[in-house]
Amino acid sequence: MTSSSASSRKALSKIACNRLQKELTEWQLSPPSSFKHKVTDNLQRWVIEANGAAGTLYANETYQLQVDFPEHYPMEAPQVIFAPPAPLHPHIYSNGHICLDILYDSWSPAMTVSSICISILSMLSSATVKQRPADNDRYVKNCRSGRSPKETRWWFHDDKV
Image 1 (cartoon, helix red, strand yellow):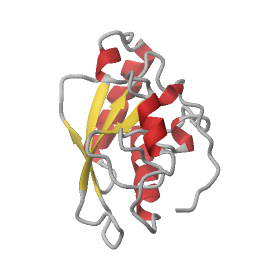
Image 2: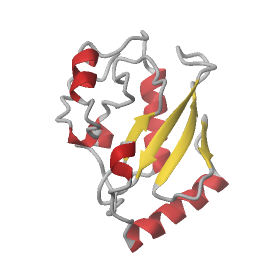
Image 3: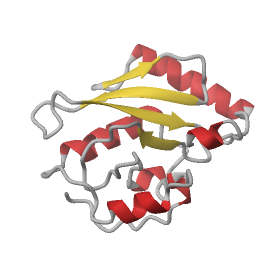
C-alpha cells in the first residue's frame, strides 16, 4: 500500500496473523538466498533487502522491497513494491510497481513471501538489459494519486527481457 492508504487498511485477520507468524519463523530459520528481512514491529508491512545475484546485471546492487499484507492474506496477494530507487528493469516501473503475474492474476494462497522473493530475484537475474518499461512515464503519471499496483489491469505478454 502507499503511505497514504497505509493508515486506512484493515487489521489482519487471525488466519493472516497466524500465517505471517509462521512465515516469519521459517524465514528466520532459513531465509531465501540474497534477501534479508529488516525487523520492525509491524507484522502487516515487511521491509526486505534484496541483493542482486552474482553474475547478473544486478550483481552487487541492493534494493528494498516493501510488502504490505491485506486483511485476508494468504487468500489475497500482498502488495509488493520496490522502495526508491527501484532497479532499472523492463518490468519494474520507476515508482517501484512490479509487473509480475504471481503478484496479481496468478497469485495462489500456497505462495509465501519467500517464494515471491525468489520469483523477483529470478526476474531480475534473467534481464539482459537495464531499462524501464516502454510505458513507464505514462503509467507513473497515472499513478500519482497514490494508486496501488493491485488496482492496475496488467497485461502479462512477455516473460523474456
